Amino acid sequence: MTVFYVSLAYIGLVLVSIFIPQIPDSAFRVIAIGLLLGWYFSIGKKQVLYVKETWPNGYPRKSWTKPLLVAFGALIAFLVVIFLLALIAATMTTER
Image 1 (cartoon, rainbow, N blue to C red):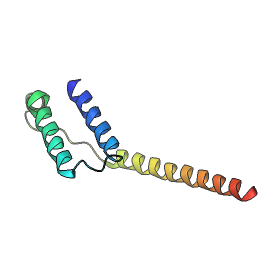
Image 2: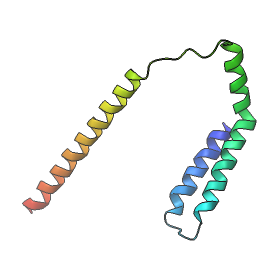
Image 3: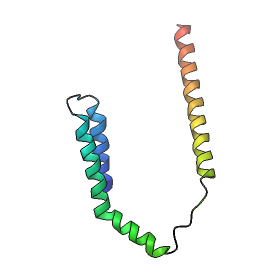
Image 4: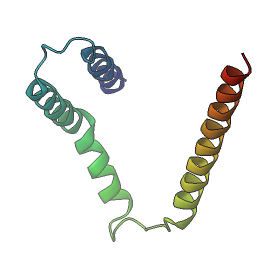
């Protein structure tokens, strides 16, 4: 949970930095690398060992077709909703 909360704090810092232009981009790169290293040395190694012990002959690969089709469908649905909202907003402003 610590990695999760630190990641949330990092995302919050990135979002707040939009309004504070004095923070250099290199600082965020260093923090991101620190997050990655912190994750790896805290729980990442355990995950790698678990996968190697559970599937000694290699992790069984699954097809990407279904997840990609679902994601593409969700993207299309999102774009349709945005288009409809923009259309409604445009018609409401021209009626006034």
